[in-house]
Length: 215
Image (cartoon, rainbow, N blue to C red; front, side, top):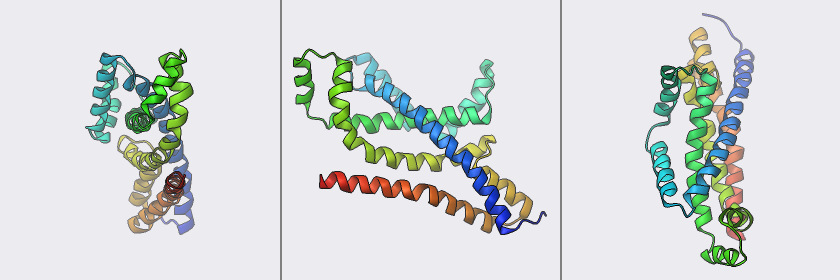
């Protein structure tokens, strides 16, 4: 058994938290881009595209994230594409986030009065211009709070990346526990770090919801 002081444990876990934050940010940005593309087809006029996107979203929402992570990490090498734990985690979480963000944003878009579509069409705007210049700016106001709330879930979901060997906060905690046999102290610190990351985001989402409700 290796002896670690409390500050040694805290320092190692805080250093590992950087990789949790990096993975969360990468997955959120990638998921945002994917979600926006899915949204364009999800609320568009093309029936086949809408059905395909609905099926895609249902597949990601109806299966466990851990299974999706395994399919990327173990499945891609079967077709000759070797991926590192970082790439597998980023791709899996990005696709997962994209499916959920597309649905969150669809709800916000559909809350915009239909008359806004008609009015912009009367001005001669095409679908993409309508969406970009008229609909999305109005939907953004309603979409921000649930989007921030989903980011909290995404941060916590990064813990699953430890299963495929990505050395984020949870994986580092497992390694330290095996070396020191101090699971209570280590996982207690891990919980505090996750709380320190997620609580400000949760408070921000609630604040935005209250502000919008007052407005």
